[in-house]
Image 1 (cartoon, helix red, strand yellow):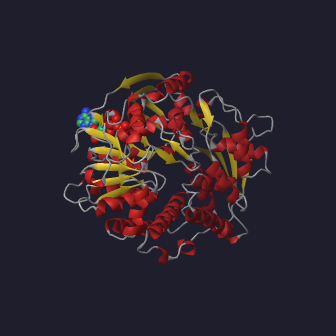
Image 2 (image 1 turned 90 degrees about the vertical axis):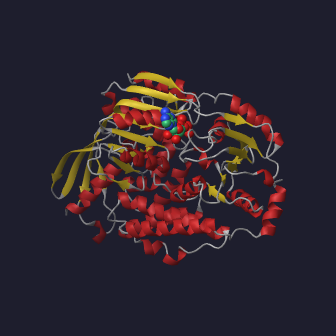
Image 3 (image 1 turned 120 degrees about the vertical axis):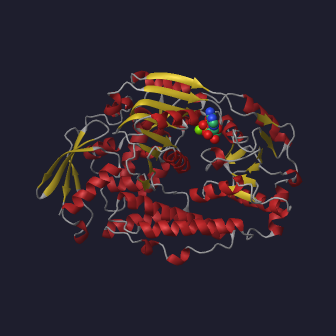
Length: 570
Ligand SMILES: Nc1ncnc2c1ncn2[C@@H]1O[C@H](COP(=O)(O)OP(=O)(O)OP(=O)(O)O)[C@@H](O)[C@H]1O
Ligand SMILES: [Mg+2]
């Protein structure tokens, strides 16, 4: 009998809702929860084992404040959503400067010395690196990302991805890295939540100077003390006057930056065919483990993979020994159209050259095409434009309360309502939740509770990847039908196989995403997604196969590549 109730609570805490204040056992379990929004919600869980019955558990949200008179769309005071942080007068230290100026290094020094703390980063790669570093320095540190939970005995510290930041614990010290991401249209709200909600005596924010006035303004209402520490680059970055116009000018330590997967493989091929260098590759849809392996191989002087071909995925999170950044283009396709790179993007990518204390202490930056040089030079000289607004999105319990007052609305309608009607102060914009709404449209068709729908909506599915999107739809369907999702029902084992063509490689990358999603769900709905170990081992196999493919020589046929590259003028 207790089984469903315990499962329910696990789900609730996974969503960031905090303490159980009261539990009553009867024919149903009744929980009083204190949420991060600072209001109490009463949840009644039917404790029947729903798998033997007709459907998933039915949650009866009976919060007392859910009247239609309450203006749910008033998001003008988000700092009040975090009462634990508001009880503190935090000392907030902004570490700002260009890339490679030691911002994160300085903040981590404070974290290492603190009695308890948390590092929040934008990427799993960064959380991994910090956990490794702290553990090595004998500061026991847990690693918590959406897909990993590695707990160390006696851990006083945590390294987390920002979405996993816990706003109900109290810390001595906290870091939010790459804080300028508060301005990101999709993920900005997770940074804002951490900025307003982390209850730490000392809060270190690392990032671009362009974020300073906005953060200062946001924190005027919290009563925190704010200090700004500004740093200079630790090693020089030299913009070159000449482009790299031929493949024979490519040298060890070069990183050629391009923005499509197709171009990455085409450039890799042409550089390798010239016979002097082998290339590692880094781009967004490669699994993070593979990205790290490729970076390690590029950094390792004992092998011949001494050139990197990469997308802007190198902009954050990897330690790379790059001597020269070469932009193949200063434009990128961003999902809707081709646009110029912003000043911040150009500076962030260019700044990867010449990492302090690396093999190449001076960085250089140039382009493939002469006509791009003026824009490159001008961008490197300009300050990044100031950030004007931070992303915001209502907390889950606000969505719940709205749902109580509008029981007929599906999650899609609820999200749409907030997007269209949210009232915000001038420091904020409502986050772009288009991708979440695509998932909401799928799960609204299924007999699931709001919490479960929300879980699928915030899962790390890539809805723009067909295989990944189909995986999510299947997981949600099977979950709603039987309550248990076995991996083999969704993914035949023979789909994880050695790729022979770039198309098969792309498919394997997508299959990795599906497996990653399974692991993510299994950490939140343990009993319903019981094959975590199988999924994790299949993921490792995918990584190995992808790496093997990248080392092998099975890319496009030489004639196709040269025809394609002739069009690219290289
Ligand atoms: N005082 C220092 N002593 C030794 N190494 C340092 C020092 N400061 C920075 N470093 C090293 O220099 C490199 C760059 O530092 P760090 O990552 O902190 O820069 P950053 O400003 O955060 O860069 P980014 O904007 O790219 O995140 C790292 O490898 C770091 O360990
Ligand atoms: Mg940093």
